[in-house]
Length: 348
Ligand SMILES: [Mn+2]
Image 1 (tube, rainbow, N blue to C red):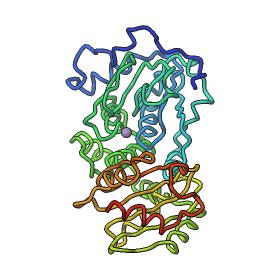
Image 2: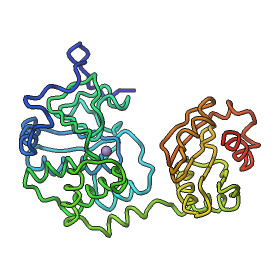
Image 3: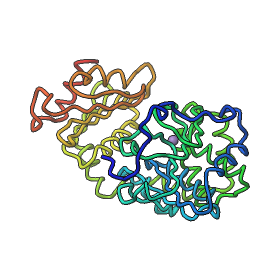
Image 4: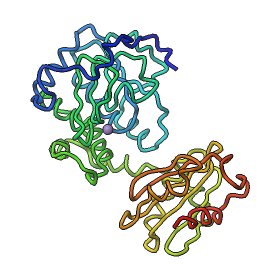
């Protein structure tokens, strides 16, 4: 998996988790964090920023480029995943965020490596890379070391943390950077419907004056490709409404994301308390569950129905199941909307 040439520390010392900084991370001021972060770098450094590309990670990487401008020789942003979501591609394109695929660069050839919005143990593609800096808002994991670590799990987005760094540096973000960070916070906090910190709101308010909201809207509205509309046609003709539940089996799909888009569309139908949309992808039955979450639990239902045969789970209002076709009682050719109804109603 890891052919990037760099080596992770293999001795016991590497298993201590984030390095103990002089002061407890949560007690530091933004300025102290910024100075410690800057101290990691020299003028001669070629810096690699590694991210798992989603809006928060992309915006944070974009911010690190700004923070290190004039302070290092170069900053390269790299990600291992293929970006399929149209919103994310449009974000990169409109805001001109330069990033390349991780397999096209050699991490060992960079003098400093930075990880944002993720941790070295999160993906196999990160495992053999030695990071100098890790900034993230996910719960801290063990088994890695870095010179500078800033993990704040009460934050809704890494982008909110990056705004604090920029403000401490007196670096006013460009419209593109501010728009990226603004969009990132919107996405990661689900428009502040998730439990987030006051700091997220403060960063968001700061960006409000600097971001271009028309660009944000353009990115948000770019979720559908024209070619994907055909699946909506299938959904509308296949759809069955029974006992305030909508069911639609779409058949083979090029990627399961389209099922999510269809389910999110159908859940807007007033008469529907539940939405079940299924399709076949890579010899798996994928089922997307949607409900309002009020006295209902999509995650629990998904587990009850499909937990035995495949992987299933999610939240109160949204869930997903993936079942290898070989685990299904009937073969793939016979799957249709009625099958979906039969499978789900058995457990409701
Ligand atoms: Mn994030």
